[in-house]
Length: 202
Image (cartoon, rainbow, N blue to C red):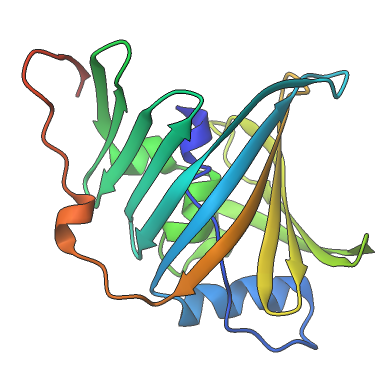
């Protein structure tokens, strides 16, 4: 569930000379919807790759998103504005939670949440490295699963997100094929559990 956060990844209409904190704020103000492809790699505390997956995501602010894992296993996360649905196709299981409690101080709150970013995060410019301009977001809430979230910008694009949890596990997400403010169907953010699956949660 914590990888929901990863809900979600993205392109920004930004001032190329702005620092990374201003880039994120501009994103929140200007980007109302987004579509992108992602490749997600998970590393253990020794930075050995433990898992890689890829798929497509979209969001419509505030609070609506769809995060579809296509490889290696089919999984789907849908935020409908009120609830978060997590569907594991192989397990034939759906987990549902209230969206506010599920997102909290997660990366999803940075990308698909409301305009009050600094209520949940301490934001800091983290300089430039490997050709990217970096922002570090540290959750203020103790309920967050993450120590920090780093976002790397290439020009006007958010190219990479790096998430570190309290066990030293690191998740790296690379984004591509981004579309800013596309027209998205409301049906994309609705989820009806398939017949016969187990539904667990609120």
